[in-house]
Length: 79
View 1 (cartoon, rainbow, N blue to C red):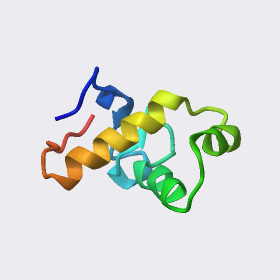
View 2 (view 1 turned 60 degrees about the vertical axis):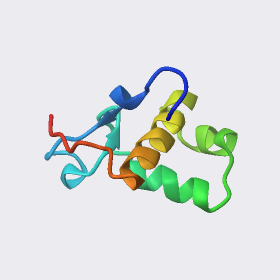
View 3 (view 1 turned 30 degrees about the horizontal axis):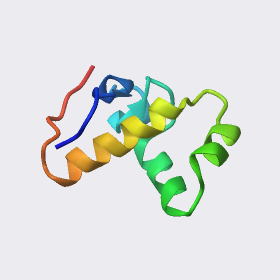
View 4 (view 1 turned 180 degrees about the horizontal axis):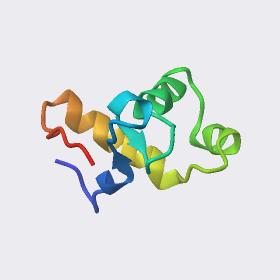
């Protein structure tokens, strides 16, 4: 179970953006892209420095989304 408020409202799905893949706040930055950056060893600070438009809560939203998705608890939605 996740503690604290959900940040999933930062994750958006729009068929006209990134082929309907989950993105952050309607930008063309996919959840997958941020997960790959984290998996490569980048820190939050390094990611935020490289992507000015991202906020720390965006990264936390990506992690929350990934945790729920890996457990099969994400309902697919389209804007």
